[in-house]
Length: 506
Image 1: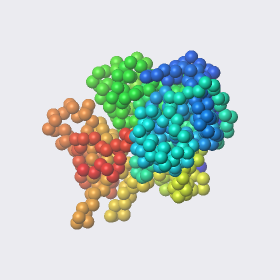
Image 2: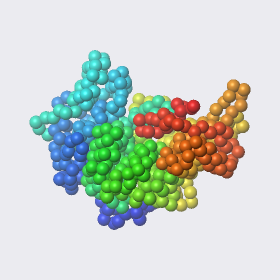
Image 3: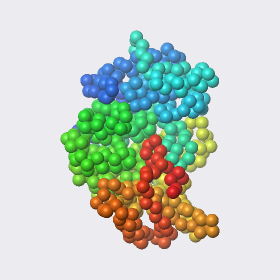
Image 4: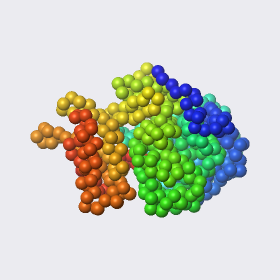
């Protein structure tokens, strides 16, 4: 068993900031402190605006709406809404009442919404009014699930319920990029530890300005965007349309952004086109994760005076497991494991324990049996630590390719070698077996437009393949690539912008 020193991140900030990074047992405890400390700070901005005090009042009155609809402590309440002020209000109201918020992605269809109501035993569903046409099947086949429009309010407030940290708070869907999606049950203490972890490794984290582009139903958006903002008295600007993201950035001038690598890449290309001014003078830090972060991004953002920090986490860990506050010197790493997290490496796989761990997958006992061993959660991620304690993700256990030679190959570990090439924006490795029984390792690459633009167009593929060959020559024989495909279109991606393996072979 291993744990990080409690002061592993202390050197990256000042004593005053560190003194504010404290433990809260529940969402309600954290929220009460933030409202008392930052009542006049704007909490949510965008199409609608609310200060911490105003949002607190909205939340208290919506708790009454829930009670009037029969919602009690321990009940599960679905939230089917896009990123908006009413989503934030509903999430705070449900969790501080002591009910469990089941966060349903906005893209779900009518049948899946009904299925979720049954699987998770929803007492009620808070919905965005434009989604009402998708609720007919729910109304017909599960009328016991009360439907509550997110815009509703009540004349009188209802106070928070006093809870323990172990009380369940939310169910979030796992990404499901390599298997079926599952609902991870997170307690209040798990959400709060993940939120606290989001404050480490950054010099200025309190009373900052964020622009939200990730969905609040995704753990990265919920924990590192919303809850960390509320914890730190910061303002969260809700981008209503991803197409307007950079217009919103120019108007709102954030100081911190939370991005997946694909969005960070897009923003970098625009930065090269329009210059540093597109971010505004306040922009200092980008937190990047949910997929492989190419070292190129760290280097290029530094040239604009912006610090890009990679990290690692999962839905099952309330998002944050590790963060890299030294990305400039160790850009391939996802950093140090956060304090309070216990870990061990078993046959190359990372196993975890800690207060930020989920309570299990809801309604999936067989999956729970497969995912735990003696109380340890088996992440499925293959990792290594260096002698300084930096963590490196080398692949996924389920994605390991067993070659006809008997050798095991981790696609992600091989891909990481090629991500070091500046001309490679994204890549994918897989095994291809031919009719005659022969096989090859295939590498598909998506060129990085901002870099390959300096070459004559007709030479791009040849130059890229030459650089790939130089890297390939240094790999062990069983990891060598036999075939290279240079893509002209993007990969198929999940809603969180991860490349979806198994759906991208050309």
